[in-house]
Image 1: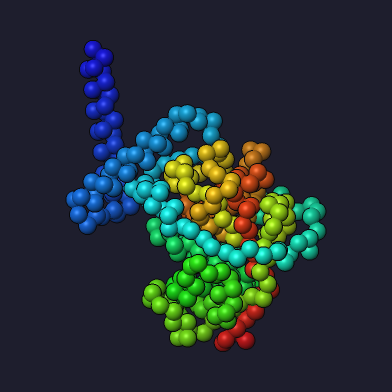
Image 2: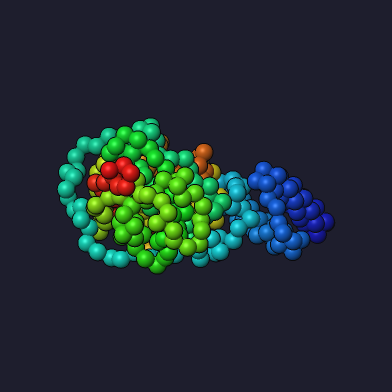
Length: 309
């Protein structure tokens, strides 16, 4: 009798996964080159979905939600292996130049019209560094000049290959070009074929993991932050405040732009573009969640360049 019940339950689970797989392919227009590739991706999908359901069952009081998304057929190990970042270590230039006092309870730079649309995260991986560094520079320009001009992510990707310091590289290029002037990745640097519209003269680097200081910094402009994104619960995040003990505070493999902060039901959070809530996610603030305060960078003092001078 037990064997029959087990077989029935197993059949139901397999059937449900097959239905979810078919819906996933429709929802995200997934197409695979070969039958073998599709079979492999379906196996990965099944593993991820089962892990998601297991987490939900063992963490009923979690402050965040999970759901099947565009990354559900990806091995988290493969994604993480593409996210290695390399930066030179140096003293912070900012130190205590902004006094820590009574800052607003929340801040969302989107409401100021200085944040560009969320970059398609289906291309997550090595391009993350180019995406976030470009976002920081274009946002700083928008804040200080009152005009949002989208920068060229492909230019930074082509011309600042890892492992070099991307912000020093952008300065050496005399800044970033407009998106329309360098629209596609060319796999070689052709920055001489476009004219940069902005650069910056200061690179601030946090040295003490002080998230209160991060609150002070973000009053001026957005922040670059690295974190551990190697857990399936992060990959399948769909909403709420990501607050978990499963991620690491010492191993980082992903980079994001912090564009704001706030508090929900007593839980302070940072706001970042990525995926989840209409392309954004919130992660717990004040506890170095997933190592988010380990490597924090801000560019400052934008300078017009090229045709904008």
